[in-house]
Amino acid sequence: MVASEDTPLLGGPSHTPAPTSRREKLYAFLEGKTPVGAIYESFTIFLIILNVVSFILASLFVEKYNDETWAREDGGICGKVCDGLWFGNYDDNILEFLNIGSTSVLEIVTVAVFSMDYLLRVNLADLENPKFKGFWGKIRYLPTFFSIVDLASTVPFYVDSFILRDSDLVASQFLRMFRLFRMMRVEG
Image 1 (cartoon, rainbow, N blue to C red):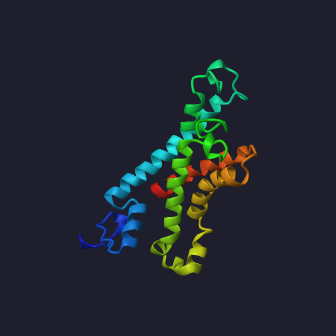
Image 2: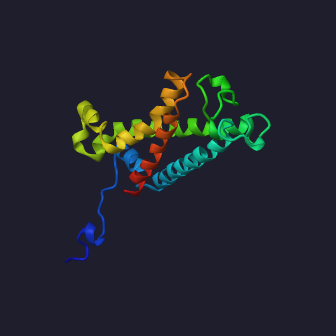
Image 3: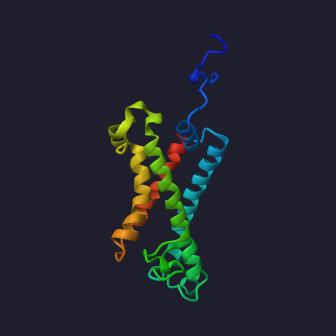
């Protein structure tokens, strides 16, 4: 075997051509193949972990499930500001003026980042695989595993905020845990 031969299974040197177009550079960024892309990738993992921790801690501050005085909406250790920043348990937290139901700043930031990521990935899908080129290629990309995972991690926010505002759909909170599957894209 020649030392300069490209042998991925044996850990040989990789000769991936450097991205040249703006689309290729953006795709390399999303895939974490650039220095700034690696930071973005770490940031999305941090957001996912922060959301999981927030989801777990939020359950401690629901009076319906925890009648301790420290867990109360008014007079507890968290209150409306904390709820608006991290948990989104109550409609009347500091984000009440948005009129989109119970949400948090963490949720809004996470959904904004992941929604933009999803739209960019759909647009750049042909760089992942040429069969996703053109309009029908993008349609073929939509039912792929990671596309569904990405969509399932953001759609509950939009459904809860704009379609089913007055419902208490606990299952939609659970669907947000699909964000954990996004880490497989990073690790894969």
